[in-house]
Image (cartoon, rainbow, N blue to C red; front, side, top):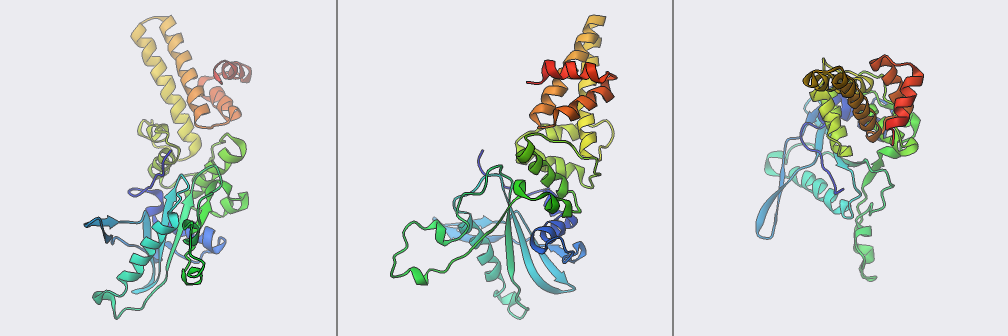
Length: 305
């Protein structure tokens, strides 16, 4: 999978989520930045290359402000793959942000620092350069001391400690918990935690995992889902409804039975591919299909690959 940037309608665009990410990852969970003190930076920067003018835009950037005073510009970049030249990209963003502060319309304003972090969602450790100097294979020895360095701050979400995940107070905790569970256990036990931004969470999960079913689960919801458990319930209910419809189309008892079986099979296989644990799937079979645990276990053994 190539690198995947998230720009529009991203979960981190919400101030409560953005502040939460910064507070946990940079401030050890202390509530330093409040969501009401954040303001989106809608500015795009331009650069000239190949005799053409190009636009560049961060995934998410927000000003931390007190009143009209800008304390800092905070930027988030999202990566599913480790990029070999991420330092070059990040220094471009930060340099443009500093350059904008000396434009004529801002020359009398107080200057502020620019802080950028990379949220990395890969299952393997980041193994690419984390500094500008690491991007260069051959720096002349005589000039080495004059080559300034620039370091990037990469946070490996799948490698966060349980106590770090527990610090998140926004919907980002659900996202982080999913990646930590999938890395450590190779399966996912969905949470009963209520989500505030359901659509944004599922869209983000769909992009990060390259699995459209996360988003499809919400699109086909029977009523509004609020937790990841309800997302799973919705997928199961959808399978049951589709099974019933197939049975009605057949117009026979055999058709209804076959449709129900296909619904069960589709649910088990989909949940397995999404990383949901076998135990969680079994409990959902008991709940949604009125099975005994023994019957659910038999279905699980039949369809679990």
